[in-house]
Amino acid sequence: MGLYSTGSGAGNPLSSASMSTTPRHLLLRKPTPRHHQLGFLSTFAFPLLHTSSGSRACNSSCQRSSTENIGRKITCSLLKVEDDVNDESCELVSGVELSVGEGADSINAHLFKAVKNNNGTGILLLSDIFGFEDPSTREFAYRVACNGYNVLLPDLFRGDPWTKDRLEDRPKNLFDKWISEQEPQRVAKDIATSAKWMVDEFLAAGISKKLGLIGFCFGGGRVIEVLAKDQGAYFGIGVSFYGTRIDTSVASKLRVVVFKGRGHGFAHRPQSFEEDEDAEQAFMMMRNWLNDGLVANTC
Image (cartoon, rainbow, N blue to C red; front, side, top):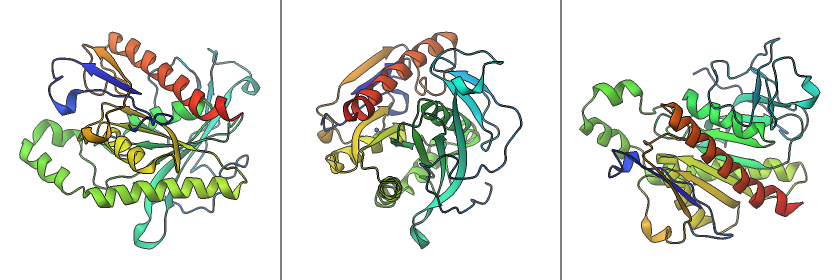
């Protein structure tokens, strides 16, 4: 499945939007890390970096919220809830920074886990050029986890993401140089390492299920490549938002939904009330797509 937006920059590969899936299968989406031995499917199996006595209420329709504290436990629910709601009716999400892989192949990542009502399904989330520590991307990962998932967000750029100050103040040739240094084979290997780590964790817990794959921009383009090569080995479904640098020869069977007039990044970084509304619609479409492909059909 594919989602695209069109706006004033629609001709620019950095200004499109897409949601994609393996057709069931369509060919076609710093603090020093603490190292944990994770059995991440067991309740509270991994520690928080630190916890706060307060919890945050959220729901399936909350679009923007603070994610300054990656280790904070937050309260989520598929239903609209109030601040004084009983926690027993809410979903809880825990977050931790960790390292996956071994030796030189290890990479940093954030793991977001639904603590209650965990559906035993893993999602690999691939960031845009701003990397795995970008607040908008981490908030999106929290929100996906709120729906019962275990979401792994790896550092695709090995500690060297593109930054917003570079975007605003640096000439395009510096971006071209930076992006050329993101060696495709290395990125593909890091994605494979992350996927294998998740699969191994599930198998260790006695669960054999396909993973979901989500990506934005740069990560969205990698979703298409990964699913085309994977052919259903690890992943059962994928979503690519505004994927860039895509090999169109492997994307001929995408389902695409277009949001006219929306700018690049609208789904996870909306800039207006109108974009908020379409971002909400895109999230709900993605949520239903993931549920139908990964949860409902495996029950």
